[in-house]
Length: 339
Image 1 (cartoon, rainbow, N blue to C red):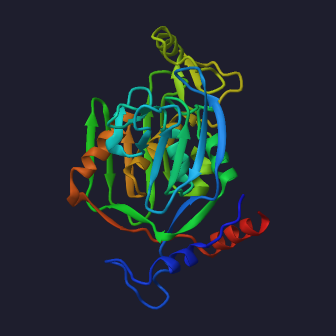
Image 2: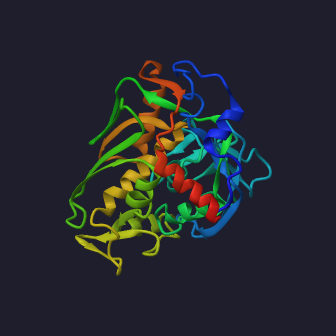
Image 3: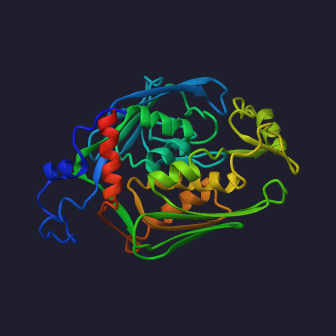
């Protein structure tokens, strides 16, 4: 991992000596208790197959300036605007995956697993450069993207991180699916429940309080999944050409076709929680609140964000305070010394 030129406190001290509204500026409290924005320490590249095209695509993560957020650049597009903001209001399709697009009609699909990795590891600003219409699916989880971010390394920037804090509950329904965001004292928690007729999946429930450690441990390696008859139908329509047992858990009736089996007994709901994190990352800033979803989907998650931002009384924009303890600070310092 690359050396961080500024630690969090130094970055914020360089950024400002004035506390934002709502933050007490007592001696030693500001800016040392506020979280700094983070970006990548350098570029990192990976190549993998596109889930639907079946064609190899190359993805490069690059650092970006403070307050720029996450942007995707289509390197293969030269006749139109190739830049797409990774934001909820640029979601143009939620069938099978989350697809982003811009006003020029340029799109990029399957963004949720990378967005989950960036959010889970606390990356606020980055440019994602891809040479095709979808991100590589890798093994169907976020594990390869976690490794990519760790290869690049991350650094604190000279600007405080801000968050979207829930102050009122927002709920949406879509058929048998329902999701809500409600106020919480700190951080983001995800409470996900799925219910399938197949005995291989059944009813599963998991609650995760999202931190870099819990993301790596509980969510990052959970793979996407589908049913054999659905995969065959998608291929008949020219989709899922890159799908295989190498990048998805495939269920046939009550059986799991992957010879290695599952990575976790509840891998299915873990992956749904991973998808939730990736979709909520499109809020543009960390969300402080408690998510609860019954039969969540990409469509449901985007409907929830649209409902949230349509109700300005339900949230407020505020500095995100650091929750890192002394042990975390010492571990990060050790990481830098070992780099």
